[in-house]
Length: 575
Image 1 (cartoon, rainbow, N blue to C red):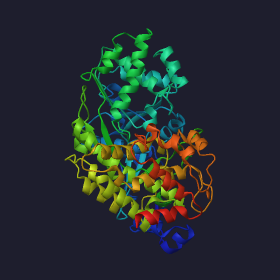
Image 2 (cartoon, one colour):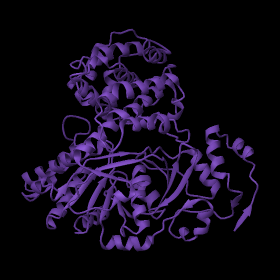
Image 3 (tube, helix red, strand yellow):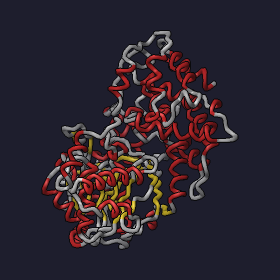
Image 4 (cartoon, rainbow, N blue to C red):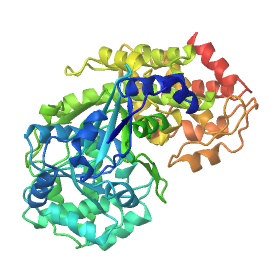
C-alpha cells in the first residue's frame, strides 16, 4: 500500500544537512515522487516478485527468469569471475545482464571471492547475489537497476567452495575466467624482489590446495588440464598495462615449478603456453566506481529501498548491496577465446586485436585519464580536498591536469582508431571528472600509487626518451606530480596537519627512507631521495638516468619549504 504525502523538499534537505550538489541529486530523484512507503523493499529474489513497487520507485528489474538462469548455469557454466568488487558488479555483470535480458545468453556468471570471504556472507548471500546499480549522470540523471546476472557466489578460502570452483574448471562448457583483483593480485613477490613465503610454500606443496591467490588459479587450470586439456580464456580486466601478460606470467610460474618438482604433469607448462588452448587476452577497462556515497544511500532510503548499509569486513573491505558509478564506460578486449565467448559486443564491448588494445590501454592509462586522476589525488590530499569533482573548480589544479594531459601526454599517444584520444580526454576533463554527482575521492584514487606510477607516468617518460622529435627535458608537470607524490608520503598536508596516507604495499619502505625529512627543512634531500627516484620498479625508469632526477629533487625541496608551499609551487609552475 502507498500513502500519499506532500514532500517539503526544502525542509527535507535542511534536515539532512545536505550540500547543494546532494540536494540537486535528491531533487532529481524525488521530483516525480509524492509518496512514501509503508513497506520497504529488500534486495532478494522474493521481493523482486513485487514488480509494481520497484517500478514505482523507478528501479529497473531483470527481464529474464533469474531462477531459470541459475539452473542453466549449474548445468553448463560458461563464465566464472574472480574478484567481487564494485567495478565487476556495476559494469561487467551489468553487461552480461543486457544479454540475458535480450535472450542472447541463458547462463549467468559464477562470482568467486579470493581474499575476503566475509563479503560473500555479509552481502552476496543475504542479497541473493543481487546488486543495485546506481548510475550517476553528469546532467543529474540517475538510473537505478537491479543486477541479477550472478548465478552464485563462492569463496576460494573455503575448502568446500574451492572444490566447487574446481568442478567449474572441469566443465567442458566453461568458456572464460575473468578477473578484477587489482594489479597487486597478480604479484608473486608482494612488492619486493623475491617471491613471498606463501608463494614459495605453494611452489613446494603443489596444486592440491594452495594458499596464495595465483597458486589457486594455477591449481584450477591444472584441473582443466587433467580433464582433457580443455580450452579456456583467462581474461584480466584489471586496470594495468598488458594485464593478460601479468596473469600469464603468474600462472606459468606455478606450472613450471610444479612440473619441475613432480607436483604436476610435465606437460602442464606447455598447456599453459599453448594460446590455442589457453589464452590470456589483453584488455582495457574504464569506469569510475567510488565507494558507496551517503547522499545516494539517503536517496535510496527515501524511495523505500532498505538494503543500504555498508558492511565492513575484518579485513577492512567496505561493501554495500548498492554500487554507485559514473555513466561513461569502456571495455576493449583482445578477441582471443579458444572455447568461445558470450556475445558481449552486443552489449557495447569492443573486441579487437592485441595491438589495438595496447594502443587504447596506453591512451587511457598512460595519458588521457589515469595520470590525471593520480595528479588530482596527490595534490587533492595535500590541499585538503575530499571530492575529486571539487578539485575541478580549482583553477590551479585544472591547469595542472590540462598541461599533463594535452601538452605533455597527447604528443606520445598513438591513435588506436577505435577511440579518439582527443575526444576521450575532452570527455574526462570536461564531463567525467567534474561530474558534481560523482562522489569519488582523492583518498581512494591514491591507493597503491607506487604500483600505478610506473605505468601512469613512466611509460610517457620512456616514450619521450625513445622519440626523435620530443625532448624529455620539456616535461615539467609530470616531474612535479612525481615530486608531489614523494611529498605526499610525508603524511602532512599543506597546512601542516597530519593525514592518513592511503594504503600502499611500498609505503613502509618509502616512509622509512623519508623519515628524516620534515616540513620546513631546506635540504638538499639527495640522500633520502636518490634510492627512491632511481627505483625503476616505481618509475619504470631511473629518473636520474632519464635526466629528470635533479628536477624532481628541486621540486620536492620547494614543496617542503613550509606551510602553503604546495599551493605556491603549483601556482608557480602552472602559471
